[in-house]
Each structure stands twice: as C-alpha cells, then as structure tokens.
Image 1 (cartoon, rainbow, N blue to C red):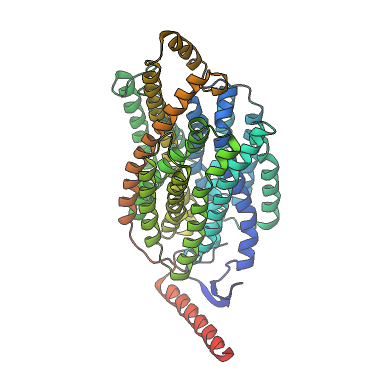
Image 2 (cartoon, helix red, strand yellow):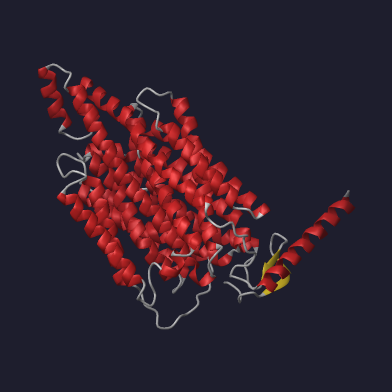
Length: 552
C-alpha cells in the first residue's frame, strides 16, 4: 500500500503524526500485525519447543550427536534456502496469499514430524517445516516494510522482537511440559492449531495491495545452485574431524570445499546474468547490505549455533528434566525482550539506530566470552547472568540490522533485501549448528575416551557397549552416565569460545555500517518531500507542546 514516491499530505495517522498519502493508520497497522506476529510466533515456537525435546527425541529414536545437530540444521537449511525465493515472490505476487501458503506448508511439515518413527523421516519433515518457516521469516518482515516508514518502524519491530522473545521463553517451557506429560510428538502437533488461528487472523486483518508486474520470472537455476552449494558445505562441516568419516584436512574435505565453493561461485555468475535474480547483486554489494550480511551470518552462528546446545547442556550435563531446562533459559529470553522492545521504542523516538546495534554486538561478544568459561559445575546463577547478557545483545541486533538495510532500498526491493539478510542469518545459524555440533561431538568423545581409559578393564567393556547405543542416558550404568554428563558439561564452554570469536566479526561489521538517518516515508522520497514531512512533524510537535503549556 505504498504511496507514490515522494508523495505526502498534511494528514494525521492514528497516533497523531503526519503520515504519507495512502499509508495505513496506527490502528490499521496494529490490526495487520496481529496476524503477522501470530504467524511468526508459531514458527519460532516450533523451533524452541523442539530444542528442549531433542535430547528425549534422540534417546527414543536411538540417534547420535550428529543427528541431534542435523534435526536443527535441516530446518535451518531449508529455511535459508527458501527465504530468498519467498522474498522474491513477495516482490512479485500477493503477499497475503504467500504468507498463508507458507503457513499451510508449515502445518503439513509439523504433522509429519509429529508422526515420525525414525530420524530420517523426522529430518524430511523438518525440511518441509523449514520451507514454511522461510516463507514466514521473509514475508512478515517484507510486509511490515511495505506498510510502515523506517522512521516509525522501530517500535513495530520491537513488537516483533517481543513476540520472538515470548516464543523463545515460552517454547522451551511448553516443550518441557509436553515432553514430561503428553510426549515429545506433541511438540510438533501443538503448532498446528496455533498456525490455523494465525491463518484466519491474517485473512481478516491483513489487506495489502498487489502491484502486478509483466514478464515475471523466478530464478530457479540460481535457487538450485545456491541450495546445492550451501548443502555441500554443511555436509562437510557436519562430518569433518570425526573418526568414522574424514579428517578436516583430507581428500574428502577438499572435494566438499572445492565443490561447494564452485557451486556458490556459479550461483553468483548466474545471478549476474538473469533478469530477476534470487540474490540481486546490486543489493548485496551495497555497503550497508554487505556489512549487514556479514554481521547477520555471525549473529546466526552465535544465536542458533551456540544457544541450540544450551538446553542439551542443562539436560545432559546437569541432569535437569525438559521443563526445568526450559525454565533455565528464561534469563536469555528476558534480555532479548527488554532489549528488542526498548531499543525499538528509542529508535523511533530519537531516529538513531547505529548506537544500539554496536552496543548489541559488544554485549554479544561479552556474553559468549563469559559463557566460554562454564563447565559441568558452574553455578546456575552465574550461567543465568551470562545468557541474559547474550539475550540483551541479540535483542538489540536482530531486527535493527534488518531496519538498517530496509532504510537503504526502495519499497519494490524491500522483500528481496529483507529476505537476503534473513537468509544469511539463518545460513549462519545452520553453519553454527553444524560446526559447533561437530566441535562439541569431537570434544565430548575425547573427554569420554580419556575418562573411560582410567576405569578397570571390566568397566571399560561395559562403558564401551553402553556408549554405542546413543545418548539415552537412562539406560546407561550410573558410572557411565556420569562420565558422559561431565564430558558434555566440560565440552560446552568450547563452543561458546568459538561463538565469541565469531561475535568479533559482528562487532567489526556493524561499526563500519554507514550511519544513515532513517527516512520518514515508506518508499525512498525526494529531498523536498522528506523536508516537507519533517516540517509537518515538527509543526505537530510544537502544537502538542503549546497544548501542554495551556493545560498547565
């Protein structure tokens, strides 16, 4: 519903501020956000519920640590691969229909995942879920970008951040309760009615005009090459360094790395030639977007990669049940909630966004650095403080990086630009889960072998047999389960150390992002229209101040 570029009028929105011609009022925006946030909340909830249930799922389905990581990775990979496609579709077709389609796909994947009887089927269902989640991730942000000017988008992004925080806090708790009562399958089934509610809310509240375009084409070749390249690299990092597969420096590793990079290079070549690229080179090479992409990859590595293993740490290393593990993650989510909503409101008030993302990057680095010191005996209060700092940093970064990118592109490219940032953040998350999962598995195995080697010969035989049956600690002898718990507890700090190194990249990237003022129109406006809008805003503020003085 964007107005003509540069067109403004001296009218007021629902909040009393001047607004662009044809723009939605504050009340209309809130009504539309109800369905959008409900859809996003459902998708995010599915991820956080699963993270708590994973130790139980892997135990019952007799999975391994590598499969543990891939249950997360497959969904993230499918989300990352499909996000640019959904973003491009959002610039070409009806966004309302697209977001409803994404919800339906997500529901189908959830039902199949709940009925899965082995890990391969569960992985397939997670791919379907990821495709739906990719649509919701790209489309919700793109729709918000087409109905709200960047200058006013901070507080609405804060609402999205609040929904993310609530889903991340409620998900682990709800997942723990479901695992302890109804069973882990309901961690997937519970998302179905929530998704249906979101579907009907969108049908009732969301009204977005569609700009018809002729000679539209989708870059399926680019999408295929991109997915293939990412998949090859993820397969490499998932299995490299493990005794049963291949070393980091080996012929197999060289094959995967060269093949993956070649496919990504071919992707860039194709994207530079096709009419409607999935990843527009012009947008990617723009300085703000390029730096935001680098920062988003690093944020994804830390957020999805490191935090995925927090609930495993609480359950496997510390012996808490799923519900308790969920409750123990609340400090991180509380930090996200406060930082996301607070920074959004302050950005809208002052029009300054860069100080918040720089502060967020610093907090993320400090939080991961502190978490790198934990082991199997670290005080839970100490861990709570550390993860709260990570939550504060993440809350300031995620939505505000997207805001910075949206501020630099026209409304017709906002879907592609938003999805590009979301793609690389999710891609970073998939890399993080795979790489950190591999590092964790290798470190746990080393610590476990060292501990077992100190046992008497008869106990070594018992331990060796028990460890071959997977991660079901309930069926292990006490002395073996204790060895495994200590190994996981002492190995977890290593993955946070890696996340801290990656967080340095985030900090450097956001420091160099150009500090451009947030525009006050939905689309890129002419200087005259921008000046007129600011004059109207100042005049309105002066009238409010006069009314306050008269009242006094």
